[in-house]
Length: 306
Image (spheres, rainbow, N blue to C red):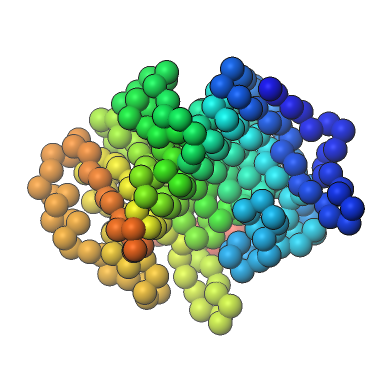
């Protein structure tokens, strides 16, 4: 079933409670939905500027800050219960989640632009393993699968891409800017993210901009954040550029873990390298801060490019 939220946009009111709803919902294994050329703007008066764990729960497992600073549309597109959805050449802004994939659904996003969403793409596990879609990642994958190809994430995002609860995703040739915590988050046992694993130079880029914590200090958001059993895979040549830490949040400027880099140097450049985070731990992936990575935008603000 495909539902377009026309009658209740931008929200459904139940008593005194405003319930945010997806703009488009695709549900059921029989659904094959393709979306082209859609521009969708949520209803939000300001930017996301507070990490979700510091805000109130919206009752749907996501966080809202207040009715003036957070989209009242729960998701631009929500694929669930085994649906297959293809999204190409679309533009989403001011969403809680622009594209959400859950409960055994499959979604591919190609040439999509994401502006100012808490999560650009949110992939959550559940459902039955998929065997009907191509590619090594998809054949081995769990219930929920997502591919993100040649997409632009402009921020502000908590994570541009978040993969949780045993879901599997692949990212190729994307650009991510202005994230609050990390460009990509991978949380939970059996949760898997692959980034640019085809041979050749990586074309996924990441820009880190300084953020201010409540005490007034400064921090630089990470490239990747792995938590509680998450796994990420990339090419050895590219992973050497990242700077891995075994405890992502212990210090403001954590040191790289040399054991990872020793393993990487022992691999051929085009071999894949997998980082698995223990279920009771957190791994982070920063970026090199040498002068070759430091840039200035047209407004004179510094950022790090990787």
